[in-house]
Image (cartoon, rainbow, N blue to C red; front, side, top):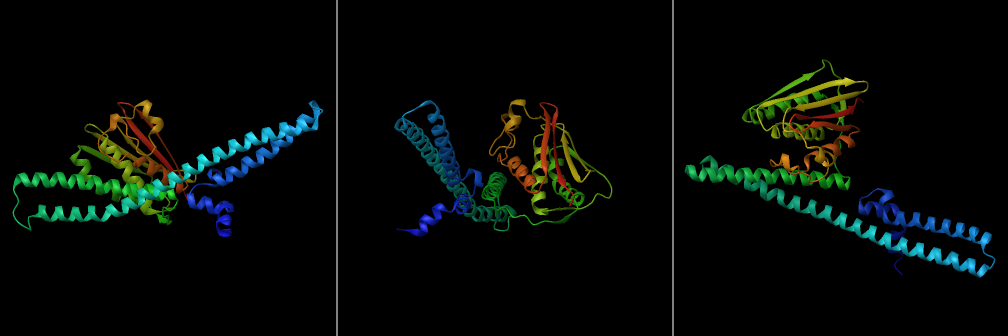
Length: 312
């Protein structure tokens, strides 16, 4: 008899860690809960039976029948939940492993394309340069997808690293706007930043909050659809910092607004590249940092995203 395996099967916290899911979703925990329900149902059936049935054998048969049916249902449900948990774990591990394996080749491909485009390895014609530009663009898209997949897998596994430090959100946003200026100018879009003076620093992860801001600013510029403006506001509300980014772009259709934070969701009206993971990642990071995110949007008039972070 494999006592180690039996102990592992009975160790509910270990099973939850294995599947990387909360306790209340763990198959073994659900089986334990359903077992308790079966016992309670059997007791209630017995008490009710003693009031309306005189024959103790009939009472016992009724109780056993009800308990047996509930046990079979519990087993089937638990087996289905366990299979779903295994599939979810395998999917997350597959995404993580494939993303790790692809990251180095894609990076090396980008370096090779840059070297060829520079002309250091020999003269290239205009036609060849156009093909290299296409390769570079697609290489960048693949790199973006791999980065998002890695972050998503870490979020789902609960291993996304969070290292909090005192951060000036004002300075982070100023730096980010400077980095995005060429992209904004090429899109004929201006980015204005308004902020309260002497805003306090917040305790947060600078790298992760930068990912959030990059996603929101990139979306605001990418989905403008025309010449326009992006306005960013930063202010203090009670014991929180409120971030607001507003654009006057194409907006989000009402039928898509329910799904906007879901993984891989891309609205048909906003189908200009992207991985469909940006807003899922953004929401997950904000919530992990103790904040809240929401939005207002009207199709054809623009979208405003908001998030708050605690001042600690």
